[in-house]
Length: 305
Image (cartoon, rainbow, N blue to C red; front, side, top):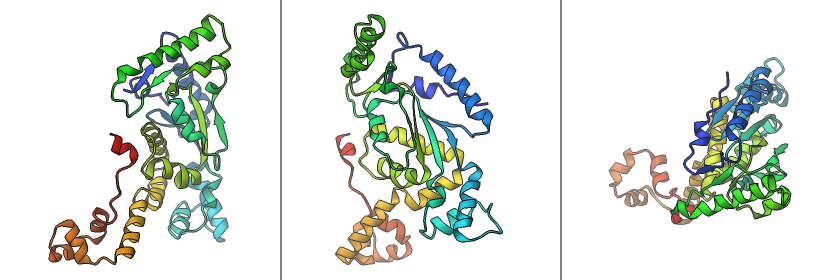
């Protein structure tokens, strides 16, 4: 039976919840109850990682993509072969059509508005967006930036959120749709849903927000949770896809460009590593290239930290 890991949400070190104004514990109880009724009891494999709950992955047991890959390749006598898409199509660099229509539905709980903004920019391969907090639902609190050096400086932001809630819900002086214009960028949105095709996840969302350096820290945290939830549902599929689209691709590209541009030899690589040529000849060439010509510069966020 699915149980919501509340500690991963409520005890997150950068989250400040307004439990005095918003019945968050009651909301979480209800969310947990209806995840069981609407998803788990219907046969879906629900997986939580941190602040992300993957409610529904449509490629159940990888059989849908198996059927579609078999049809694509004209293999009608073995259409439940769950290895065919990964090993005959991904490995060969063929079409990703078998998972283009397969989606994962994510529920985000305790996630700030800035992260939502980073994710909602993806429209290709995103069939579902449910964000009640963009209408008249109250914010749940404030999310400190990953880069914050003085957390106490942000207490006033929490008070601004309190003021907006009181203004709209207690004093009824303003409609929340109007009062929320006063909210700080980092307010915690009420739970929201985003659904992406698996192709969009591996080729775009995970690549740009996780595999490539430069994404904002809070967004990296949440997208990491999304990826971990996918892995919890189908470890073999997602680790296979990561092997073909993961962070090492940037290093490969940098290494190949540098080798072609500078015409380097094994001797040059050995010198960069500070080892003798004989030592270099006995070492793993791939690892040496990744340590030297494939090494990436720090991102803007890493420099700031």
